[in-house]
Image 1 (tube, helix red, strand yellow):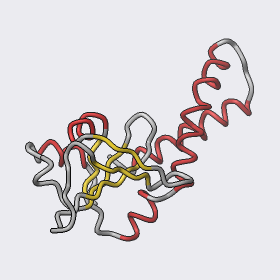
Image 2 (cartoon, helix red, strand yellow):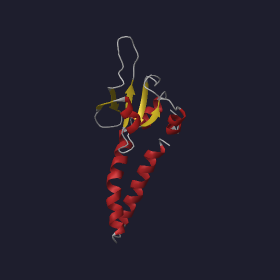
Image 3 (cartoon, rainbow, N blue to C red):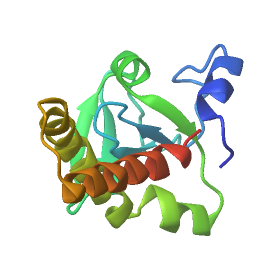
Image 4 (cartoon, rainbow, N blue to C red):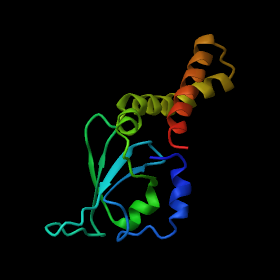
Length: 143
């Protein structure tokens, strides 16, 4: 998987259900959840663009969601295929990386609000720096 996947998606101007690779990865931009989409075109399976099964890869428990192809393209960022096992283990399926990102997204606004309202604490400033590092670390994996 290469960096700049959204650029890759834009270059693939016509990524459609018919020409999508068999196994692709998508990211929910709001939550940071990584989802895998398998579109298998075997004789026994009949892929349906109106009911695509997405499963999470970096959450504590595997969750399944059903979306139409149009909803997937609209709601999620295309990450591409993954042929590298190290990248899959260290980024796409890394539950600790995802957990830190979620904790930082939840905790950072309240810490910044505390500082803005006149609170002065070294511990708060350190946690803001740590949360910012966690967010940047997660987002740098996909840029």
